Length: 379
Image (cartoon, rainbow, N blue to C red; front, top):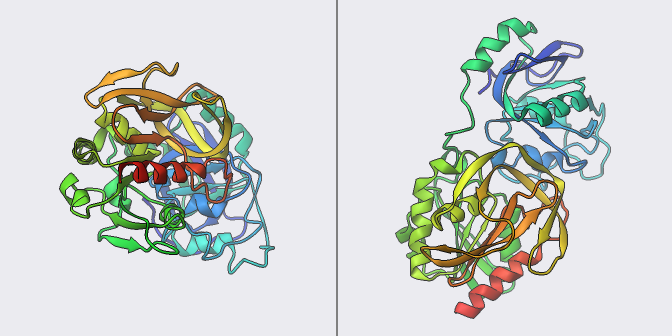
């Protein structure tokens, strides 16, 4: 996805080109080179390090709508995985120095070390408006040749997000265990479709011993652990390609084991229940997305990162599926997108957002307690 090079040379010209030909000039930020991916925007004013290290951003060029990025530097604790996953990074006004007692390094240096090509000095407000009006699209960033005409053919030759099977590319290759804190109450089998570090930690804090398994694990692999529950993680790519995960979840549902899915896991559960998925125009990405619980009327401000959604009735009307009646439980208030599913006759539910929500907000933390209650009820 990139040609790794040296760290940014101050003032070195760079260019970002969208697949519709719109170009934005700026300066190199991070590594010198070229990179390609799907241009998306993230609306959070905080949490840039968590965004960069979220596996769900694999093969995406992330545009930060907040103008000042890098103020608090980087540190090991805020990593959501072992590396930076974004294909490219776009900021308006990068901080010249890190100012935080927690910082162990500078953001620009971390990007360069990871080989992540970025661009700064871009009018990110204009770029975000363009993506909102035209939709997320492929793009390229180059600090090798700032000629838009030379970069555009490469952008058009790069792969699209539709049809991209990316979860196995970011998943763990070997199973591992996150031990329960304060004694084990439950054993959870987590299907790693691009899991964030904070997720198993949140379950471990509630007494769950979390066994994290690779994305292509089968129902037999999951059930062999004799779990009290199965967790389906977030992850990148098109859920229409994840037949392996859908098949695994179908087997778990048939076994009657409680299931909890988030983000990509919500889409996988939706497909296992018989619903289809579709690509959103520009998606939801950021830590400030309002979601309504249709059962209680409660509104939560939530953390999102998804470009696809489940196609189901958003009025809460139950739908007959191979696993009994299922209802949409949560809806996005900005655009009425499905944000959660509840199975009424089998022990399974999901949400389209992040209850672990590192770095925040924490309105949805209670969903892990709901999962615990569900496992306790079946156990």
